[in-house]
Length: 267
Image 1 (cartoon, one colour):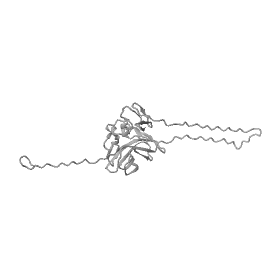
Image 2 (cartoon, rainbow, N blue to C red; image 1 turned 180 degrees about the vertical axis):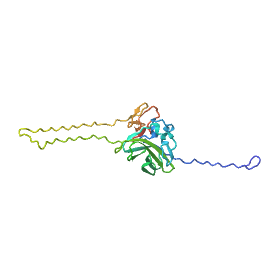
Image 3 (cartoon, rainbow, N blue to C red; image 1 turned 180 degrees about the horizontal axis):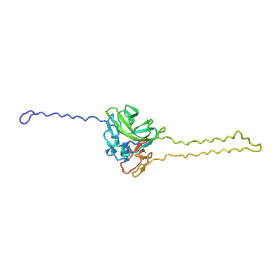
Image 4 (cartoon, rainbow, N blue to C red; image 1 turned 90 degrees about the horizontal axis):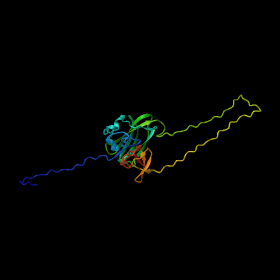
């Protein structure tokens, strides 16, 4: 356009450049409770990650709990609660947003326990559970689980503290040994007298202990101030939830719907 002095003035063209796309996926291991799940439930004081346990995200190929983002998760001295397990465990992921998945990887130390393919598909929003064999590891171990995203360069990281006792599964069954009584055989050199009637042992009666019949209680409504143990079920907003972490509801915002580190929806 022309200025008042008749000079041609040009106006620079400004183009709006959108920011680069970021992964919308978020998720973490909620059972057994990962370190960020323990932060979210208040078991350990961890700083900002307690408000977003699903956001431990960083570049692929890292080998730590924090994704170089939340250093508290790398601190082994914080008193993380170790879950007692057998030599295989079911690990359950909670998603707040799903995303195409390359794979999931599980490590103890530098040992890769297993890789589970994601086939570049979106996992269900209800979550996924992986059955992982822990091999010959025993005692207290720190397991690293990595969720590698399929269409970005990022991954999500969860560390789970375990106390591995051995056995054949997550909760090895308790068995009661069967006591076998061997009858007494008389000595071959002993001949009973003709007037003596051999004593016959009276067989012991077999006693059967009736197992109590248990019925599943109807879940009660979730309420503020209540104390919940792991495995308790409640109803909230017409849905049923199972408790993942023992806790007392001090804050009314800790609803099952808003606290995935504490509750898992029962399908």
